[in-house]
Amino acid sequence: MDILTLIGVLLALVAIFGGTIAKGSGLAALWNLAAFVIVVIGTIAAALIQARPAVFLQSMKILPWAFVPPRLDPEAIIERIISWSQVARKEGLLGLESLAETEEDPFARKGLQLLVDGTEPETIRTILEVDSQTREDFHTQAAKVYESMGIYAPTMGIIGAVMGLMAVMQNLADPSRLGAGIAAAFVATIYGIASANLFFLPVANKLKAIIQNQGSYREMIIEGIISIAEGENPRNIETKLQGYLH
Image 1 (spheres, rainbow, N blue to C red):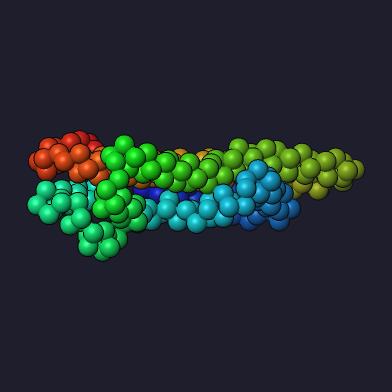
Image 2 (image 1 turned 180 degrees about the vertical axis):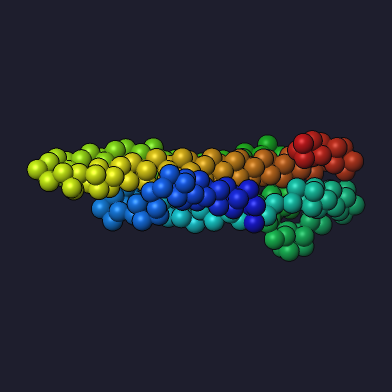
């Protein structure tokens, strides 16, 4: 669990609800069905129009990462890479075949299999870098779905406010309905701005940081695999990979 995300969400709720109560408006003032429909449905509609189906579905899959990021253990993978290099020096690259079959990380397993197949180091690098970059680009596109929602939501809030004020203008002859009508109109603005700045944009940035971290993790694996293919000393490999921990 990413405790900072959880704390941030809770503080955001406190800021909105607590601020409303402190201003004397009451929680009921924050609810307006029409504003909710305009802002939430409108924002989702805009995101659906923008994104490819595969990208939008992926954005739904990676949303939990903001709260529970994928577990990466760089120190553990460095230890495994060093053990692979030691096996390769003693038994040759074919000695890694059994390790490739039992490796749980699909990316590392692919690299090991390329080593076992006797693939040239530069070819291994090209194959793995293309794989890594393709994954990173796809996940980044998915994260940008939330970034786009953070852009669209405030605009939808303004649209909701304008539509609410239009309804108020139709009731100018009845002053008793003006106050409630204007308040309801601005609820849409609150929905749009608050959702964008307290959820969509922060979530997008958090996801992009996680995706970048995953890319660095795979880059470390690539360097380790290439070093093994080039027959580097295990101690030198360890020294090189330790740099990724900083």
